[in-house]
Image (spheres, rainbow, N blue to C red):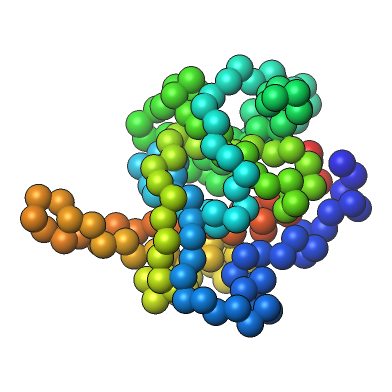
Length: 179
């Protein structure tokens, strides 16, 4: 794909799409997954399916975060190592064979793309009141939509788990010229 075919600004992020459409249902549905020790989420409507790891064919002369390609039911799909792309340290090393691949919806990617993550934990619905949109990072980083505060009980004690909600559309738009 050429650089001129997809510009980062042409891929509408889910939070901007909600704001522009005026649709404020008050809820968000996400796919939760692990990268290293951290919990992340992406918008459910950006996901086509989750598949188990399969043999990845490495491509020459590609950035290190592009793991390679797979044949997914007859379709060549490019696999991006999200942990490497986002510079997340591999504290507890997970073997590739234990990873999962989140295949993204081709309506947002305009090509067959999957992201490799350590594990997929669940599909969840959260109220937008549970999302803190205060940015903890630099103002230039628009990869993070917000931090989801998930209440869970552990041994009769309620704790708040923080889930980093990322804008996969923006992330893909910023790397799309290499695909």
